[in-house]
Picture 1 (cartoon, rainbow, N blue to C red):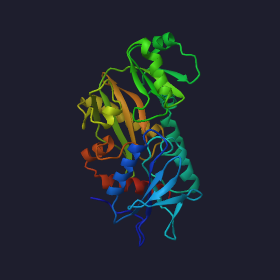
Picture 2: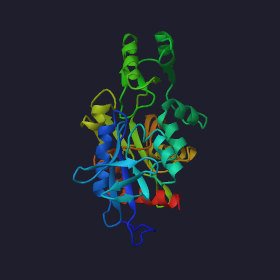
Picture 3: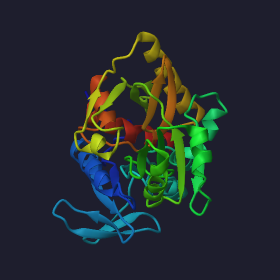
Picture 4: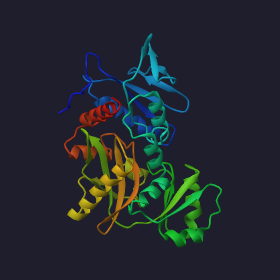
Length: 337
C-alpha cells in the first residue's frame, strides 16, 4: 500500500531523477534511474529523467529528446515552459552523486534531495576517512595501510602490517572497481597499479575470513529502519563486479545468521547510521569474525534495480519499490519543509 504524500495538492510535485555520473558506475546508475522512473507512482508525481555526464546535463524525454538543464537553478525549458523541481531523487552511483558534490549543489539551491548530506556523502565515499572516524567509536574494522600515488611502495612493510592474503582497493570507487585480492607479495605491485587506474588514493586491507553480509538502513516513515540482512556468497574469490552484477554470487535474504550475530550486526549498522548522522538510503558491508561484525564500507546511493540488494531487503520487509521510492521523496521534502 502506497501512502499519499502529505504535500499533495492540486499540482503533482515535479521530481528530477538524476542518473549517470562521471564514474565507471554510470551504466549501472542509468539502470537504477530507469527503475525509479518506472516504479514512482505516476498519480503522485511528475517524474523527469535527468542524465548528468561530464559533457552535458539534460532532461531526456520518454521519446528520447534532450533538453539542457539550466545549472544556475537546476531548471529545464521544455517546449517553451520552464520547469522547476520540487525534489531530486539521486540515483547516481559514484561521482558526482555519491561523493558530496551533487549534495552540496542542491543544498546551495535549497532543493530537497533523497540522499544524505554533503559531509556524510564525502566521508563515506572516502573509505579511509570513514574507517578512521568509525574506529574512534570502537567499530571493528580490518587492519589497513594507506597509499597515495607517488608514494614509495614498500611491499614488505605493507605485508608485515596487513598480512596475506590482502585486498588492494581504490579509495574512492564503487562496484568493486579497482579491487584486487592479493595472495602473494609478488602480485602486490600489479594490484596497486590496477587500483591507481581508478583513483590516486588507495587502501590495502587485511583479509577477513568469515560470512559477508550487507545491511540496508534508511529512514522510513520518520524512523530509522534496519532492513532484513543479506548474506553474500560469491562464486569468485570475493564479491567483485561479476559477483555483484553478472550473477556470480548467491544473495540470501534473510541471511543465515545466529540470533546473536543478527542482533550484533543490526545494532552496529544502526549505530553507524546514527553516528554519521545519516539520511536517506545506506547499505553497509560487514564480515563476521565469530559473532563480531567487522565494518568494511558504506554505500549511500546503493543499486536500486529489482535485482539489487537493498530492494531485495525492502521486499523481504514487505516494502514495494513504489513505497520505497515514495518514502525517500517524502522524507526529503519533509526535511526541507
